[in-house]
Image (cartoon, rainbow, N blue to C red; front, side):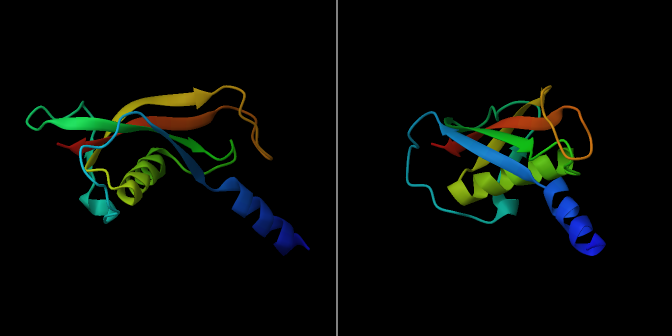
Length: 120
């Protein structure tokens, strides 16, 4: 019984959810691609290529019990971008949900926002 309860808590304590909001039509067809081919920009959008903002992405811990931190949130955003066919993602500011609740800890859920870009 303890093993089942421990496993259940571990499963519930993990994870990141990514939501997607389309913002503009892509300039061409988008196709899934490997995660490591999606460029990640942390200091702003690229200045040397024209692009279209295609979607607004929001990654957040599933609960305050989630062990996922910044690296996992960025990986989740990059993975979603890859599935969508984004050429890159431009990271925005970290977010918190002050009302987040979990099974073990009570406190905010961490998140990060990004924009999916596609080169024109």
